Amino acid sequence: MTLSQRMIEELRTASSGQAAEIRAFDEKLRVEVRLADCGRLGCLLDRLDVQPGEGDHLNIDPVQMTQKITYLEEGLEIIEIEGEGGRTILRSAPPRKEDEITSFFEMVLEPSKGLSLVRYRYDPDTGERTPVSAPLTRETLERLIHDLIELAQEWTL
View 1: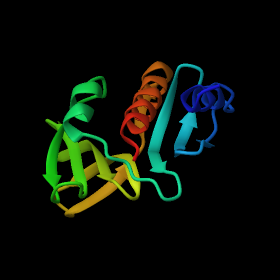
View 2 (view 1 turned 60 degrees about the horizontal axis):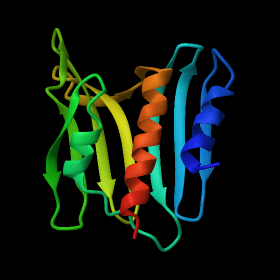
View 3 (view 1 turned 180 degrees about the vertical axis):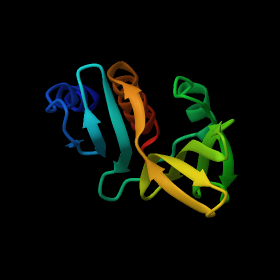
View 4 (view 1 turned 90 degrees about the horizontal axis):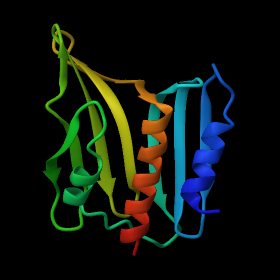
């Protein structure tokens, strides 16, 4: 069973109506998904992390990431790159705006630490950026897990 299949199987057996932390690993990658809630049809994603194994690095092409992960609420766009092989930040483009509140996905790629995906809410009145749970269908979450693992496995050094 592949790492992706193990993660999806764990997700499918997660208790409905409860928060969950789902983890799986192999010799090259560690994957963790934190859910605020999980139901039969959808989940509230708090955070998704993919980390390289001991002594490995992720060398994921951010452009390929923007081309492959096109099914979230908003598309991802490269916002910042810190030199070749450095940290890269991708965010929703355009972000979602409701009244004065802006919400967006943010993915941080760091070769030695891995990648993380979190949804944030920004309130311009307070100037605060707060992590929020992202509602995703189970199908979308399973696809996201599979695609991120696949991309990470292709580019792990």
